[in-house]
Amino acid sequence: MSWEDKPQVKMGNIGERLIRDYLEKKGLIPYFPDLSAPHPFDLLCATADKKRFCIVEIKTKPRRIYYADTGINVSVYNDYLNAQNKLNIKVYLYFVDTKMGQIYGNTLDELSKTLSLSSKKYPSHENGVVYFPLCHCLIIRDLSDEEISEIEQYTTRKYQYPSNLTPAKSAVRLDQSNNNSGDERNA
Image 1: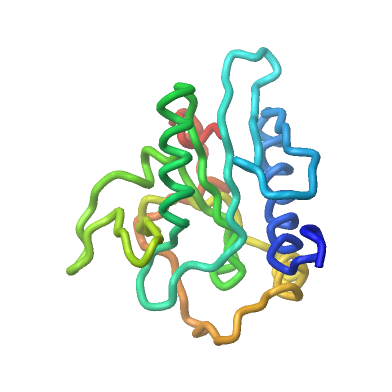
Image 2: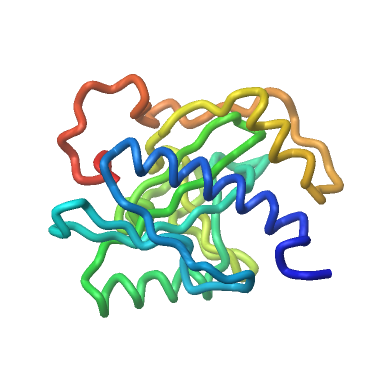
């Protein structure tokens, strides 16, 4: 099976398209790899005046069931930290979550802030994955039923998610906020 034919790649491509559309509406110009193979990150974005750049990584995956968090592979996380530190460029992580029906995310710096919730300390490193609390995420927008169906047709998940998943109460909805002055809200 070719790279582009893998279901997880097809899901990821849809999520990447949704985030590219969002970033373009925010005035950023996204550049993406033009190859059908693994790549170091999904997008490099710039403003038209070339004064601001950022790396964007998109994960098309749902949050965890039993914890209000989401995560990425720890080696990938370390790669992003390394790129951010060596290149002095912000890294944004966006999650396209069909189970919550939302797109959310934040900068790597904001997601990586330490926080204790109940008995869990974040960021939480478990079995090769680093997890971030959803309350550190900014909600970009809701997914339409059509977008959810388009993504879900490629799911390979063998278990069902409960229908009552909700975001953390302190999450900020960017699609309903008039205050776009914060750095995290501009990419």
